[in-house]
Image (tube, rainbow, N blue to C red; front, side, top):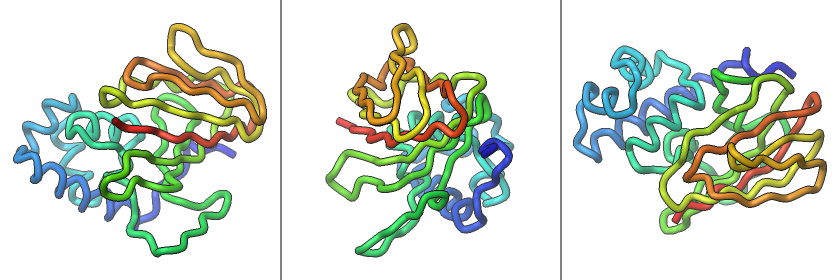
Amino acid sequence: MDVTAEKAPNSLISSIATSLRRERERMGLSLNELARRAKIAKSTLSQIESGAGNPSVETLWALAVTLDIPVSRLIAMPRPRTQVIRAGEGPAAFSEQSNYAAILLAASPPGARRDIYRLQVQPGRPRLSDPHMPGTVEHLIISSGRARVGPAEAPVELGPGDYISYAADAPHLFEALEPDTTAVIVMEHV
């Protein structure tokens, strides 16, 4: 499955636009100031907020770090009391760097500080992540395939059923070593 060519559905793009505008205004930032702090073009930010853009996972992370929020606050769709997300479904953010998709399974409700994602990754260029908010820890279990995962300076090779936990407030990476590698990741925010 080639995840880099996929587009987010219009409902997700609209939700991201609304959430981003809400969080930017909550922080009292102008478009110019948020774009400058996040190191993205003002035109890109304007397109995202107008619902015309399809932001990459890197752009969403840069915005979330700048706004001091988990990225799930930007991409989470309103959810019912009981929720089932079938394989291949769910709001996804795609990487510009590599063949990598992060599908949000559960965002933290108010007061809780964890998000759950299913990753779908193909071999190729590793996904190098910049540090997340201070105190963030990632817990990851490989579902299928093989991958190198963990701190950028010391990733570990993992296979199906293997678990790793690492500080995500430092550079870290995910590199699929087999086609159709999948994993579940829980992001814990302090």
